[in-house]
Length: 198
Image 1 (cartoon, rainbow, N blue to C red):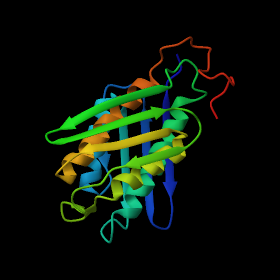
Image 2 (image 1 turned 120 degrees about the vertical axis):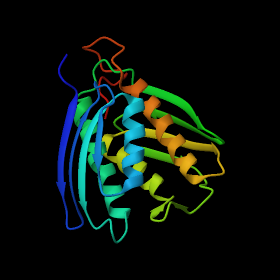
Image 3 (image 1 turned 180 degrees about the vertical axis):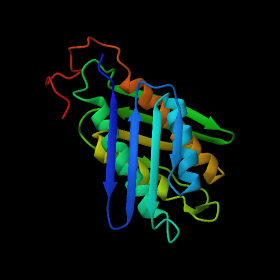
């Protein structure tokens, strides 16, 4: 089987990002985005997806992490799309629940080629730490779904702590994505009645 990896170098007036993703890895993560909470979430995501990730990002995060979080999500989505290739043999669908203490999240994903995000999550606190707005969790996943061609439904079922809520979302997404991207069908078959995922 060909290596399922994606590499993206993305530079704008706001950020510069270098990212490599291997979706047949073991969960090795080197994330240096200059946004500490984002690094923490990327580590949780790829460790539990068992994907290898290397990412560096620089830019205007000192002013506001918004651009960095959004742009890393874009790069991650593009790298995932590359790594999936023509999507032959993948299981395509995945779903998972993940708890973190009082927080419980559910993610359902279809590697459909049709980008869509349904994000139903009332974050209990507006900030996570001193500089990470809870709303950035949705921004990251919207960027991933739109650029990877995923249909994703993310539901936060309960939470009293936004850190726990975000981490439950990232971990449930990890398991759902790992399941959907796994090679479980015939290697020459695209899992679609149309014969393509787009």
